[in-house]
Image (tube, rainbow, N blue to C red):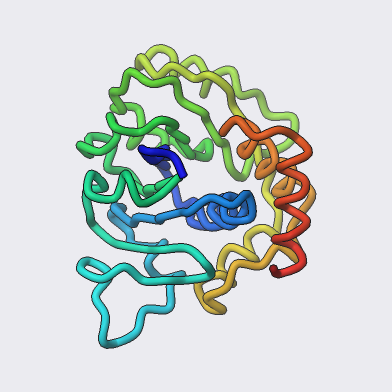
Length: 216
């Protein structure tokens, strides 16, 4: 285990599915992972089966070999985990953002969602994930808007609208499980690419995905 956790921040539209999938892959890469819901919607919290006797604002909840807390600063946990994944939602001015080693900014092309993330101010390079992209539609306007607002996009990824991905996303909240068995090809490719941005190689990413898909 590292002496200090790598903190990964997610900002923008709902992305709890990607957070949980990525966390599970990190577990299969023998990493200890903490997930934090600091968002405004609490969508990630609804994916976690929380016993009535426990409060995730106080107690760490153990779920699928991952740990989960809510509305917490992560300073006290840096030496306990290899990776800490934080869902900030649209809280683009959250104090923890500047502690992140990696920032994933997630949006679609709807203007009201774009407007809520353009005030992000951070020194780090940002990985952009564009969800529900429509085929053959240019991204030039979106990327130029990011640049004009001082957001330094290192790399961007696209997910086209897919009914299967939408069903799986909603299903996580109702089944309270992280399943890789019926994922779309584009989601698999995205997750493998994200793992590689965290300095793992293609072979490691592939092996972790196979373990996750088996339900290990």
